[in-house]
Image 1: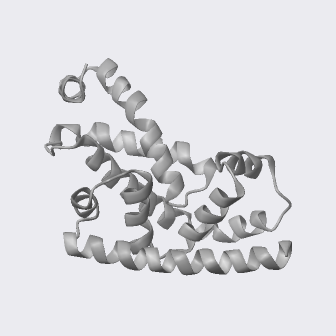
Image 2 (image 1 turned 45 degrees about the vertical axis):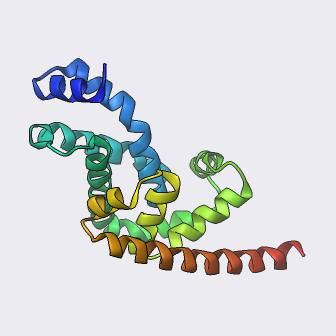
Length: 185
């Protein structure tokens, strides 16, 4: 069954169709949420909230691409989640300064190599206006037009943010390489 049929059936109240949409698209939501810098422990909650919102607003879906809609929801849920968690930052910083926990080991296992870890950390240091377009373009293979729609910005703005984001990322990666060289060299 294709995406349009599933969406139509889900809009008509089929829980089976909605469940299939979740099965198909939750890996994309999870990966994007993680790449946006969410902690591994929060990914399930964010993914669940994305699909709760999808369910609530499915009757309003009229865009050509369902995935574009999902990226918008994921970005908004991530922002909402970050705002609500700010009051817990002190606790998070305390945990970050403790020795590596089993949760951190699981999170680190998601990153396939040292280079992946360094790249992920550098991407997390970028300003969100550069971070999100880079993640969408390079890791989710979204076209400029899709990114513009997801972020509600102009095509020219997408191109500018990608260019500046790549420049900033190159600098961060060079700095990280220098720091690594100090430890390994």
